[in-house]
Image (cartoon, rainbow, N blue to C red; front, side, top):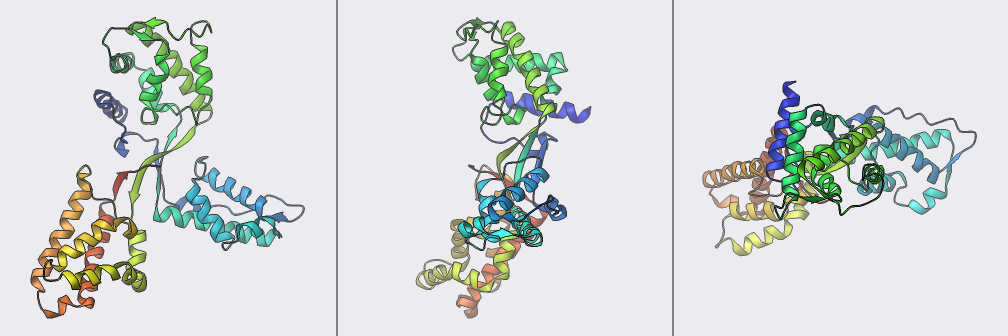
Amino acid sequence: KNKDKSLKTVFHRHFNNFSTQVISLEMSNAVTIFDGEVLRSLDLKLPELEHGVTGAQLLEISESKVSEFLSGLSLPPHLKEAAISRVSAGDDVNFRCTEFNRQQASEKLGVFVSAIADALRDTPIVVSILDGNTLELFLEDEDDFAMLAENLFTDLDEEDIGKLCKSQIRKALAHMGVEMGVPPLSEFPILDDIIKKHDGDGDGDGDEQLGQAQFAALLQPVLQDIANALHEKPITIIQNVEIFTTSRLRKILADEKTLKCLVEKMVVEESKEKDKQGRADLIKALIINNGQELGLPPLSSDNESVALIYDNVFAQLRYKEKETADASTSTEDGFMDALKDTLTNFAELLETTPVYSATDL
């Protein structure tokens, strides 16, 4: 009860300021994070095969199995590409034409699944599983639904005339969006049929003007039908949220050669600019300008938790620079040691305080 009430409170706040940003992940128990762990226990048994299976058929089977374990999620292109590249050893064309026996196919299936799991470990994805429950929270409470309808009507009535075209019901559903349990038309084609069903007597008169009460009377059965359809067949939607783990950063720290290549240019710049800029400033610039390659979240004043982590790490960097201000620290080894120490501090903070960032999918 208390959880449902809190959920509704968050949604009501959302209506006071419609935003394209993803609301806090705590707002809905339908939000799920896929980090690959569930795939580690995937049953890798293939269906009974009378004959061998081609690589093309095996890819279809593999993708279907993974999707099933990820709540029916259609695999994003970058995950499929990573898995296909690994299982085919980079030769996709020949792999699809090759025929495998049962044992070979099982081994390849394992490679495919492991590749997906590894990719999700490095870059987990956040999904919303829309099953109709979020909409039911509003529909079961008259006061909550009334507030929902009123806020929608007010927001869409831009000219403040107290009337909306019936066709605005589509825009109202788009305004609610995934965050409020309404899937996009592209993922939920039946939505078009649901709207037409309640469009009067099927006359399709989208120009008919509705007052607030009439708008609410139209919205309620539309939302109920959407909830019923989602109860029967839930939909999994990827959120435009990126979770930053330490997986990529730890890999870079463990690979001395990769890290050296990544900062080689910066070390050269340091030697040129050492009279103008301190080592801490150069490391700070390197991290801010190359954060994505390092697996770090982008620094933004809009994301307080990320800003705090950067401030904390850079404060430690400056403090240590003052403590170790001697001849050895201006060498390449001294620069690399300071950089690795700084990145390690980032990794430790991210492990204890995971952060999220909006991203374009």
